[in-house]
Length: 153
Length: 152
Image (tube, rainbow over all chains, first blue to last red; front, side):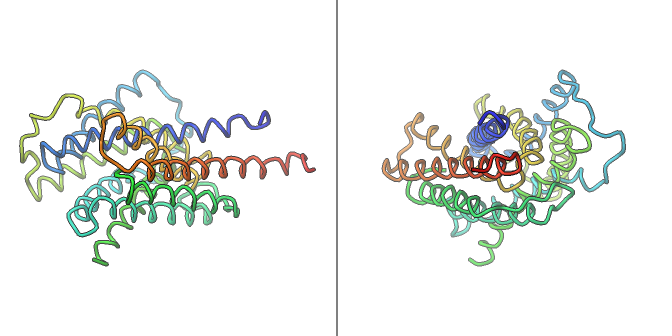
């Protein structure tokens, strides 16, 4: 343990980050019950832009590189915005909420594994080991039980 | 049905894609700056599509409670954390732990807010997820011990 304490910190941080996602679903989902689905995505992007500017002004993080990155790295927000539109379409189909979440988890996990194995988008390459697949099976299995039988997301 | 299933899978792929692109931007800038660009570019994109299709202010959006407007601020931290994590533990581990955190906290929120649900399914689901996290953790530690010369 003492040789890599940072490793546990990353796991805990990622777990807590998932908790933030639950709060976002609650907040943005509440917006969607009063306004349109567009509104429920437009407002958090607007307030988020302002909040990020404030965070940047206070934190003043150092830029990692002086060189300008390629333009495509600025398009992550488009991918995120399209996600909202796709899920609003599938929510109203026979898939409903549980099917949308379950298939979304599958897509996210499979693509993440492929991206790691190939070192896509200039990120470090990582080969998963058999234990990683056991972990994926357990977490996704537990998630599917919660989605279909637990009355959650 | 297959069409919608494909769309739902694609939505998951795009979540991961977005995190990777933002993570790449953070490699050149910072996690918070990647979160800023994610929100600004997303805002411009959604505004354009909403103007094209219309109905942005349909319904009664002003009637929603004030706290529902906090999603953006939480989202900024969420995206910045994703960018910070993906370069340290990889896309798959990041996705897996975020999913675990979302699911478990979702159950906690449901219980706190008194949402109906099956107790046994919740116990089984959370138990499996926690077991998976434990496996992921011990696995990582084992791998990292080998190059450190800690063979036994």
